[in-house]
Every structure is written in structure tokens, then in C-alpha cells.
Length: 163
Image (cartoon, rainbow, N blue to C red; front, side):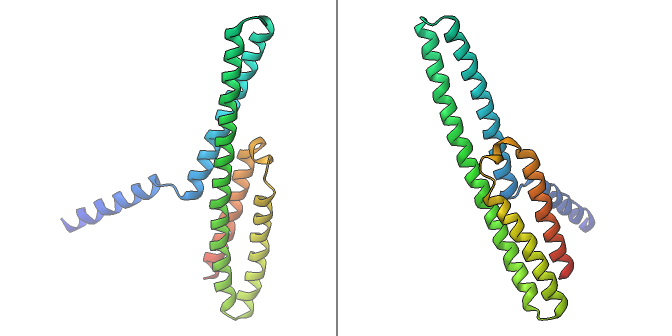
């Protein structure tokens, strides 16, 4: 009975942990969805603009175009908000890394200090990338996300190994 209970609890914990996303992943997903919405709205605006060119006197077509432009503006605002949320969660993750690096450096031995200097340089590289993302975030988001996540994971693994 006890074994079944323990197995059940472990199963729930493992499934629950896998189902939960951390804040970084949630903000990445939110930005990705917003970016897709901007793409769809841009396409709708282009389609409506073609209709207006075909029938320039159609009031309905001009109204549809104005509506699509408004929706595109809203989608852009949503994408910018999602990007800022992603940037904030990334900054929080950088801050946590910095704290762990400081903790490693505080150990005082030469190897810990050397590792801390190396990891701080890597962390600063990520910080610079995040600060310079800007417009590139929407153009090559998948590549940027994978690269940033991989670098975060590598630093976190090195920190775990050092402790």
C-alpha cells in the first residue's frame, strides 16, 4: 500500500512538473503567439488593400481595410507587450545566474573564482544579446530563443557542476 502511494505521488509530481512551464517558457510562448498574430493581421491588411485597389469606390472595402489596419495595430501592441514580458523574465533569469555566480566566487578557492569569471563573461554575453534583440526578435525568433535557452542551460549546468 505504501509503495503504491509513493509511486502515485511520484507520478503526479513528475507529470505535474512536466506540465508546468516556467515563466521564461510562458513568456516565450506568449511572444511567439503574438508574433504569429501580427503575421496573420499583416496578411489580412495586404488582402484588403488589394480589394480596395480592385474596387476603389467601394466603401465597404475601405471600411474593411481600416478595420484590418486597426487589428494589425492591436496585434503589434500585443507583440511588443509579450516581447517586454519575455525580456523581463530573461532579466530575472540573468539576475538569478548572477547571484549563483557570486555565491560560487565567494567560496574563495582559485578554481571557483576562475569558473565564476568564465561564467560571468558568458552571462554578460547573454545579457548583451537580450539587450540588443529589439527588432530581430520578430524576424528570427526561433533561432534567437533556442540559442538563448541553450546558453542559459549551459551556464546553469556549469554552475550545478561547480557546486
